[in-house]
Image: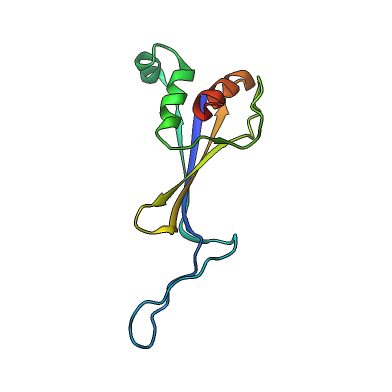
Length: 132
């Protein structure tokens, strides 16, 4: 096994589809009260720490993970408080609303650390990324 970062991203909407009126103009969409519709199906990408990463980050797997995860925009841990150890099933998440579409188009991202991560290493990364 190795140190792996799993990044899952999907695009959803928290509004119903806008319909076109009989006059041909778009009608407003309605808030879905906590429900959502999927615009783009979830996609998971895995990034694995390798020799070239070790050379670029001076062998610091924690610094590598924090840098990679910071690029995803996630910062919200799945459980509070973050202790001295974090289990493999825990994740970090974040959302990004399209500046033009608002909650009609929201990218949702989650990140998990899998593989050779120790619970203590995971906690260190979670603390650094979530700034808690």
